[in-house]
Amino acid sequence: MNHIDQKFYKLIRHLNKQTKEELFHQMKDHYLGLSKELKQSFEDYFEKFPYWGTLKEDQNEFEHIKQKVDTFTNHLEDLFWLYHRLEDYRSKQLLFAILNNWYQYDFSTLHDSLEYNYHPYFDLDIIPMAEKEVLVDLGAYTGDNILDYLDLYGSESYQKIYAYDITDETFKQLKKNLAFYPNIICKKKAVLDENKMVSFKESNVDASANMIEEEGTNKIEAVTLDHDIQEPISMLKMDIEGSEQRALIGARKHIKNDAPKLLLSVYHSFEDLWKIPKMIEEMKPGYHFYLRSHGGYIFPTEITLLAIYDKKTDE
Image 1 (cartoon, one colour):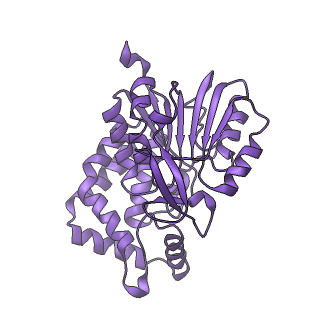
Image 2 (cartoon, helix red, strand yellow):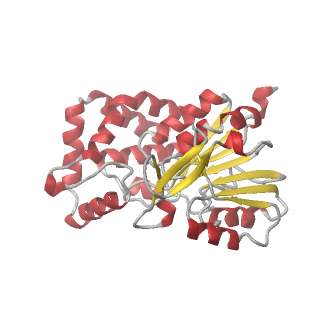
């Protein structure tokens, strides 16, 4: 057992001993002990990005902390399972750093766990090369991640790329940025777990944070990936502002039949971190899991799950 294992087990044992009420008061006290400026930064951030519950000290509103307490109270076994399924200690250190940040606002461990060597989603230690890929990018935005892919692996590394986005202005920029690359198909559609018309809520901060909602005036076609792409795919990236679980359900056949490399955002809710790997495991046992983060170190964001299927499982 090394020091990362020791820290993780110590934290899990400590969390497991606490009652729900004890955890809430401990975590609230940790938060209230932060500087006024830092607390304001947290509250402003969660106001802009409403994925993780509200946090307003002056109104005695601590929904954000309550959601974290619920995660620790109800899903420690799931987090323990994930830790033991992670393939390298960079991933395990990151998972410990995330949980320790959630619990006691530890910033230094999270800072030390951030990835500085590679582009988001494309870690050369995990995916050292790409060849004849059929890449699907859900949440392609302006094509930034596709351009990262081309920078790392070259324009000869793919057969076809599908790029999905839902916002008019970013979709125009997406098509412009990728116009001179062959076999890239841009689709202005949402990708979910059923085919239907849906609405999306425009973010006041950035178009990359636009979210699917059930009711609204901004209508767009939603499809399942299993329905919309009939050919096998080999790489699937998702960053779709909290719709990743639904999109995974709609890609179940591709995952079971094609076993694509999965490059998935797992930070748009507290449960994504453990639930998305569990969903993949249920759909197609044999994937290897890695975690990376390119986000900030004050609160863990931009967390990516890289899931790579072990072809030996089929032999």
